[in-house]
Length: 127
Length: 127
DNA sequence: GCTTGATCCTCTAGTGGCTAGAGGATGCAT
DNA sequence: ATGCATCCTCTAGCCACTAGAGGATCAAGC
Figure 1 (cartoon, rainbow over the protein chains, first blue to last red):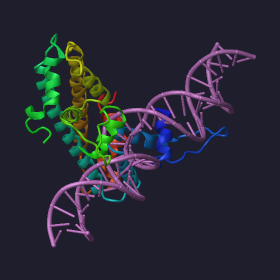
Figure 2: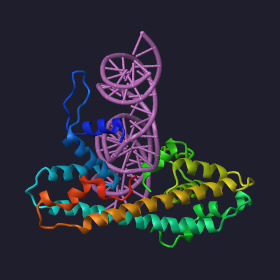
Figure 3: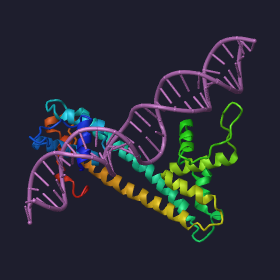
């Protein structure tokens, strides 16, 4: 995780401003480090900043039920599934286009260019 | 495809400025419309603007061989495959986290929050 | 002819999540 | 004492749009 990213999180209020040394350098204690690890992990899992903000706020209230936490995680799982499905449809069409590959031919006969221009072959992919 | 998007393509030089009516409205002929359809389709397939720019330039030179076209399409296919693989790893981990769902429990015992904070369980996913 | 509502026109600014770079100060090892 | 990595602040840039202001024009219905 790069330094400017941490600055960025601080700026948008995801991370508290840490105390400083005499020469103005930031000092992160164990809690701050854990919070940062939490954020990094959640980002790697594709959670949006706003979701992470909510999750952090929730994790600061240990006595609340974790209904909302589960809701956010479920939503994220569904979003990932949607994205995978979309990409797989994309993959299918790109493969179809590539299958008609015309290596060595001229562009005027190129099936790839033709397929990109002619939407008719895509059965409902982007309907 | 929204109007501002077309303006945007015009601004970045992906689309030529079309002729106008007396009252300054843009007039798109068949060729412009086909070009726009090409761009839209390529975007839906995830091609980046720069790739589309290259593809359009290539399609304007019908006598060139289509080696480069195939190269761009292959690169795009590989990129999609990489993204799918990444998302599937994500999906696996989110599912794992969700499996330990704790609906009704308190946040202090929440496995989701715990899993997000504790990276140790992820076997090499974000290594 | 007149109103109404949709569409178009130009323009600026904002989105998300960083990343890059300038220009300088500090810390740490040799 | 010197070199070099790292930190500091700040602005601006990335991608591919999207939103909205403030106005002009058009086509349809009455």
